[in-house]
Length: 391
Image 1: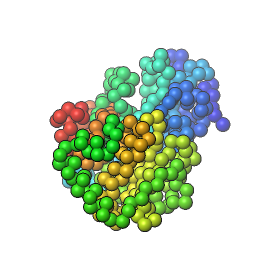
Image 2: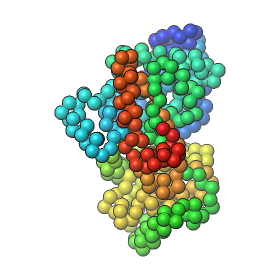
Image 3: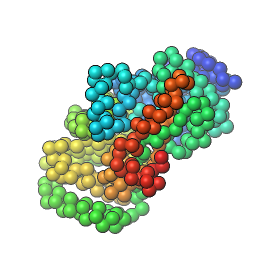
């Protein structure tokens, strides 16, 4: 049963009412669509997140209303965040060792505004933007106080939210680079034409890899809109890949992979690669408008290096994009050096962060800038020096 804006009132801000609900299903679809009129991450998408059982995440939705009308919605979540998440190399090993002995020392409980598994979005009716943001900030402060969360974070927002979020800097927030998004424009008519856009060294390396793998047993591709009957195989491949990741931001539950087709079947594309009938790779993607968005991949590492699966599956997906008039392919975060060589562009995203204790906040700012992703990723450092990834 959905809630009206007249119930569960938490706070008034001028003539706007803010309130908190625990599930997206408690928000009427028409209210959601009024503030999020389009985009990949729909009402059903957030219902899926709520239902999937993400361990360690506590979800909330802050609604902003004027009388009976919803003028803003902000998805939020509470998480105990390890400060070494963005670190790499020896510093990460040292901090991880300390956290084993003193787990609370480098872990902070934060109230995040945004999605746990995607870029941040806040739905606001345009002419209420400033008033709604003021109300949202007060609502977040109230919720953080009730949950005993000393840190407020707007997570992974693109530059298009600059006019919405930059005023928060005057409220004690500071702006920090997050992990950038990566995308490639499909403005070529064949894979060979795409190869010509790369450097000679990258072109030679890819052709060498493909020459070797094309001599092996065929890598067969199927595309499905669900994971029926193979969810265990898919999840096993996902866990193999997740276990090898240096950056871990919450393990995705099996329910998410199984349920996404039920909630978003018209957008789901499961790319499935098999060798002699055995599933050896998958890529869960969402297709909307003229874009294809890679969400999660899984590889069988008993054959991944022999078949150069990362690159051979990429070739298949680029060919699929060309054949289906896809104009932009969005890849997942991380592995930036490999993606730079493949011709992907980096698109900056930002955190807006604040410690609620005004005395602690200046020191916390120094810590956050010291731990920003660009300090621990060689490809991001090089891109920053070339101004491709702004600091």
